[in-house]
Amino acid sequence: MKILRRTGLALALALTAGLWGAGGARADEPLKVGFVYVGPIGDHGYSYQHNQGRLAVEKHFGDKVKTTYVENVPEGADAERVIRQLATSGHQLIFTTSFGFMNPTVKVAKQFPKVKFEHATGYRRAPNLAIYTARFYEGRYAAGVAAARMSKTHRLGYIASFPIPEVVRGVNAFLLGARSVDPKAEVRVVWVNSWFDPGKEREAAEALMAQGVDVLAQHTDSAAPVQAAEEKGVWAIGQSSDMSRFGPKSHLTAIVNDWSGYYISRVQAAMDGTWTSTDTWKGFDAGMVHLAPFNPAMPAAVKADVLKVVAAITEKKLHPFTGPIKDQSGKERVAAGQTLSDAELLKMNWFVEGVVGSVPH
Image (cartoon, rainbow, N blue to C red; front, side, top):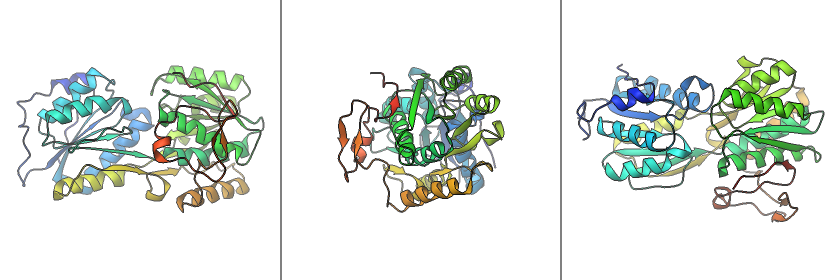
């Protein structure tokens, strides 16, 4: 199996249009599939998990595919250049995996109508541009249950990346899960305005622990918060992948993203000629989200409670955003028995009651 790897922006930009034709490959040639990552594949978080999906594609299809990945791509003009270079260098299917890649992907997709594009966590589509994401909030709700059951201070911490609906939704789901078992639970939020910055993430973790937080959660991609928690004897919940190796004693569980099945199915569709522009948003039920193994120190009763919640969400018997739900001002946002629609979840820009912090606007 031949694998083409381009790591780093400089190498990505070195790809030239003359290397391969922009038209589709012959039937006897491998399908060229490109992946664009916002962080390093060694982050052990979000980009790492997307790359695990790419590796699963290679393993599944063998020499029927040739994959390229570009890591550490800034969101903005640099992303547009990288995506365009992939399109001009013969890639027939390109996955762009960060919210900030949305507009660059839309722009390049218009310029290359014969190339298939897929964008993760965004909302803009086109005939040759599909969108996909996972219902991370399902995992965060269940993790909130675990956090509240293990907390002694009722204070939970959350290291947040950017104030986009996905992250706001995650904070709220975490709090709602926590309050489902502990009405006194509160979630304190620190924004770091980065997906991957170990220094800022550690500082945020230390600031939260100084406030009496005894369980840390994160929507950032480095293992720094887990490591900080390990040093201080505080519980931590990992992001995107099982981070227990970085804090064997502190790592309670993690919200794990599994893109393998989705990537394999979409590559197969491109090969079969059945690929269409779709909108995919799946969670526990499709295996796109699951929880990492629980810390051995977690009591059996707590494990049972968390697994019961996971089962209820999987079986559609429980939705994390079913009312009554109030916002921070005490205003009722979701009436008892009502559930927020996907459209409302996708534009969420407010915190629920119990969250300490604000959503920057």
